[in-house]
Length: 184
Ligand SMILES: CC(C)(COP(=O)(O)OP(=O)(O)OC[C@H]1O[C@@H](n2cnc3c(N)ncnc32)[C@H](O)[C@@H]1OP(=O)(O)O)[C@@H](O)C(=O)NCCC(=O)NCCS
Image (cartoon, rainbow, N blue to C red; front, side, top):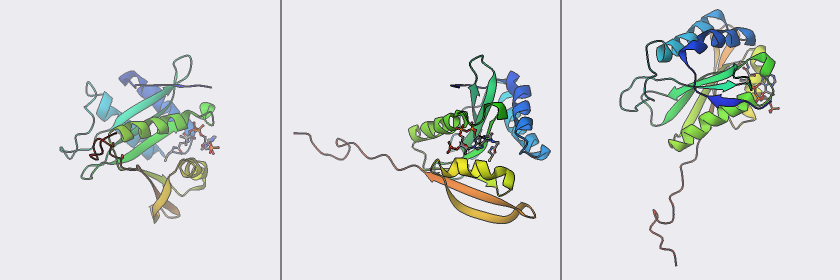
């Protein structure tokens, strides 16, 4: 199935909750946080402008994936990490189980990476859990170029470690003109 990527709107809140519930991996408190991020951007009027590295405040950007009949089937939320030089966090990614394994998650992650390369981001950081329910998720990141950078034992709960992955984006090479090379 091919999905269409597009912007989220305030009215998608209910469907977003359905997607988060349906994945069965998120705790209720985690779903609350995911919805808080959504509300921060969409409930209070027009979406805030993307993060200005100067303002020191986190901002959250969303991309949705939509089925052929325009139903929201997945989404990703990411943003620049305050206080860093072009480091970004992937806060949330979820695809409704009925649509998993069809390439939608890869499209969403690929779109975030494309946008970050355009902004000359240096790296994207992803956190996940060591719980068995997340083994497919960890494989998802690992096969897409993310490497484990750190692990905090018992972070979320006893026996539930925080696993931190990063993916670096190589600095763009200057063009021959920028390097001062004159073409013959
Ligand atoms: C992780 C997730 C976003 C991937 O989305 P997706 O649409 O299933 O991803 P794709 O179809 O593009 O890719 C499937 C790949 O992810 C892996 N995968 C992860 N979870 C999967 C699932 N439930 N079903 C099928 N494949 C899954 C597969 O191993 C596959 O890897 P491969 O392409 O190397 O063979 C999605 O499975 C999901 O929402 N999982 C639950 C929520 C979650 O864990 N979010 C991340 C929180 S840190």
